[in-house]
Structure formats: structure tokens, C-alpha cells
Figure 1 (cartoon, helix red, strand yellow):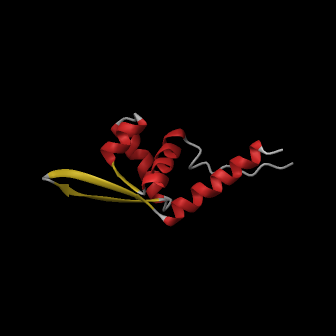
Figure 2 (cartoon, helix red, strand yellow):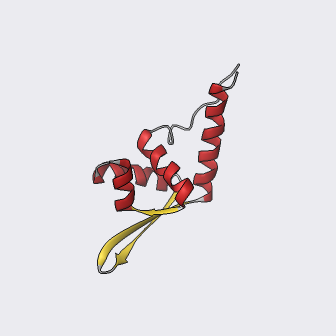
Length: 95
């Protein structure tokens, strides 16, 4: 039996939490992700940047009701990476 390598980018708990949430919701904002992951602003920013650099997310900064607003959207590449990660995990639990 051989085990597939797990995507190291998604193997981080915080990055996996963000991608998992976006799989179900497609889009979120920074404050919502911060709340649901219980991450610090600094750590979340760093992890989002890594996911964006990999092409898994699109981050758009702007204003909403005169307040700064950061929208985060999962990409097709991010969805594909998540699905491949889940399939690799299934290989670890199936006999």
C-alpha cells in the first residue's frame, strides 16, 4: 500500500480551516474568517497571503460603508487542491 503525499500548503490547520470554510461558502471577509478560525489578525493575514500566492484564493481590498473591507474568494485551483487533498486523505483510511 502506498500513501499519497498530502499537500503541505493545506496540511496547516489554519489554512485548511480557511479553505474548508470557503468550499462551502465560496466567499468570506477577513473579519468573518478571523472569527470562525479564532486566529490572530497577523497569523490569518500571513496564511491568506500564502494561499493567495499559490492561486487558491483571490483577495480584494476595498471599502464597505466607509470601512476597510477585505473579501476572500476561493478559486477553481483552490477547489481542485482541496478535492485532491481530501482524496489523498481517503487513501489513508481505506484498507
